[in-house]
Image (cartoon, rainbow, N blue to C red; front, side, top):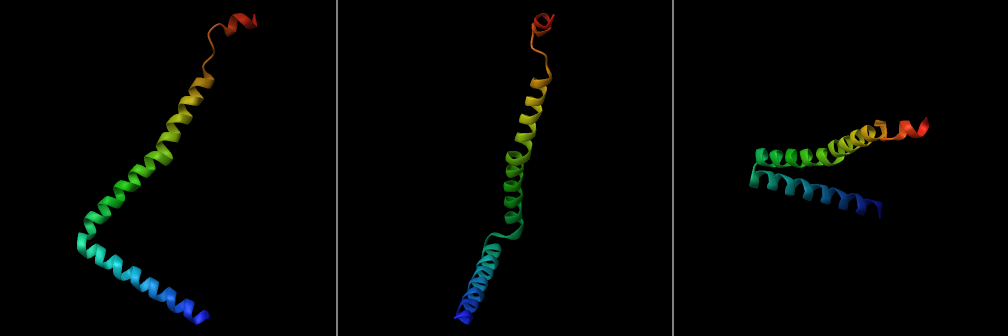
Length: 74
């Protein structure tokens, strides 16, 4: 039973490899890499840049004193 699953895994790996080679030769490696880098750039915007900007804005809002709060303390 174990031998059948190993052979199935090898067959799936081989099929994925052949499909990848066929895909890269069909469309070219340079456009494929270019598309991948553009997706990585958009993912970076969503995951890193937007939360950083939101954190910066929230931090600035918390540091600013509320108008009239000095008069209420005295």
